[in-house]
Image (cartoon, rainbow, N blue to C red):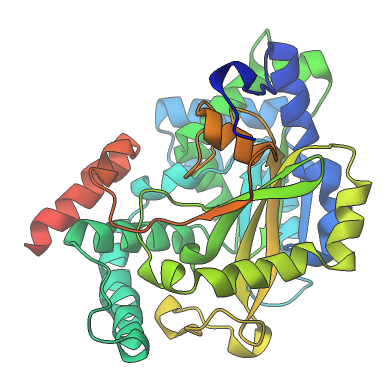
Length: 370
């Protein structure tokens, strides 16, 4: 049966729906269910005094050494450092952070050395990975135009730039991220949704693992049935994903059909949900340079890790699907057959959908390389 426009199913039709769906998809609500299949995580709430000082630091361009003179910020920093140690299990390593509702990933463009690091990623990781895939699939394997190569390099660099070890780095991200600032401002506003709902804005600390963003996928579940999967980054072309599409689907399907995941799905209160997963190199193949990670996506080389759950609703990005298209809506809601979509050719005008700072950066990198 094919879905027609009049039969489109909607999941978020009011502000109440939006707030409810967002709350259901907060990591804090389901972490205990997925704990053994995701990154070690913990969190604590951000107080209004801390949020106020972080917002003021952004607005006034307060130097970090001045911000850290505040006893309120000093206490917050102590909590951050303790949480980092707890999540790392007292061992060496990195973590990454997010707030209850979003990550401060946009801050990387404003961090010193990011552009130069992106160039290093291009030379030391992307070109190395491409060369190894040429040996596996033949000399025609290529990441395409300079735009696709530099986009890939920039996103890898942005992910790797988010791994941190100290409270100083957390403060920097929260002050420089426009996304984080928006949530902090909401927390302290007179009409704060946090105050109305009596829900905290948490700082979530998660253990860092090395991974390749090419192997991140968004999976849709309707009535707890897996209905669709898509590559997570629709603006990037990873030819190795299409070339190994069947193996990837088989690996992820095996995980979703496992007793472990079936128990998770059965316990979740939501009937419909989105699961973001990644293929994580197994411990004996852990490598920080994506150019040196295993090339073949199979059970021996990779394990499936849950990144997070998201609300099954129109405000959640559908990546290579479209909630508003009748046929796609039918796939997502299980009326049409399961489909796994990957980017099969280099997207045109990919940089045009980027946030302004990232767009300016990648276009400058492309221009400088010509």
